[in-house]
Length: 501
Image (cartoon, rainbow, N blue to C red; front, top):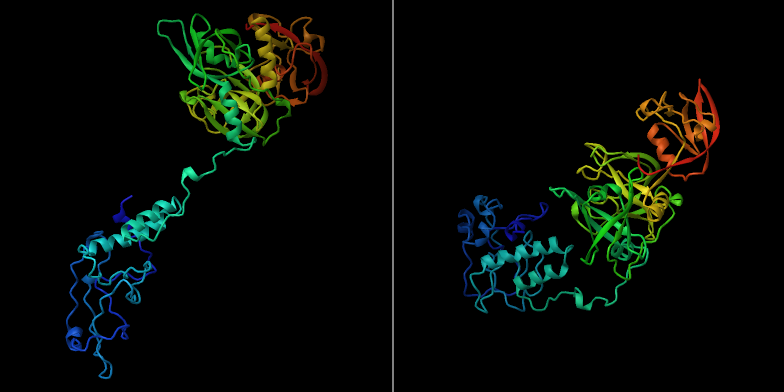
């Protein structure tokens, strides 16, 4: 910040500083020497006072210059009033009185007022420019006091040469030695969780070596890492994976299993270090709208980034994809306004206690809808509920393949607003309702519109699949549907499908 600019920042409600030394009051504190004759009043009234050669006049080219305005014609002083005597030379022990209108900013003790002559001793440099610096310093103190009172006062004292003024700030060496944050603070939660969050580098096995960066977290002490499927998909077939911890140590990893539909994958460190600390898993069913959230990840490759927000909504049906043309994933997501960007994928969404309640997976961007494009966060992030992700991860660790619950019916995935309509026929001309399957046993037929699944309303095919996949094979769920304008209910026992088709 230029001190010259600051030197002109005088409030408008104070008079402008005069360009000539101020005239002392008519009653001086020290009688004038009798040998010094008073100047004739007629001469002072008829001749404008010449502006002194003062460096203050060029402190700013746009600063007001009082000397440029001709002095008004003075009224002759009455004969009974003696002419004022010249101001006495100020001393260190007798401050010069400040004339009205020239006392802003107020000077400190033992320092002559702005505009008064400098003391003759000790021999001082041609003081006008130094005195302008004094005005500058006083204004800077007012500007800097909120940012650092010690630095402001230090600069002011140095310019004034006043050794009696000292800073009262506390240096870092005098600060408490053992500052501890409360367990519930964001800083404390992040400090505990960060060592268990990793950055994943995936490279394909092709000649181009394409890949990307994502996030994951330690699932168990055996070295399993949970992340999103789309983070590792490019390296799943002959590619390479590396996992980097916040301490900078990197380890090779391999894919244990991945589920495209759930968008969940499990990795295993090939040489897992000892002492791994898995993140605690929370209960996503107990999450409430408004609960605090903490997201950790590597947005745009910036590892160990921590952002905060709240749960904005629950059970948000989301169909997401990585833009590669592969199968979409479906989730009944937790919605959060914590900043999530490309690279956050696969990272944990934590609650205020530091427990994982979701896996950050998708964002809504202004340009390309749901997905993992390079668009940034607009406060609409979506995470796979951890209860669902835990079931999938355990299945992948046991068998390496995902298992999906199904109702045995093909529904229209394009229409929305009225429910999920069972199609007239399935893929390749097969029946839309699998014979002797769960939907057939519940009495559902082609053309039925499913409007409710359990306690959740259904408005489209993706929302139905999202809800189905929050359950397990064998679960019994009440279905609400419409047929020929009539609403009916039925109970369906979910079947299963193994692997991604």
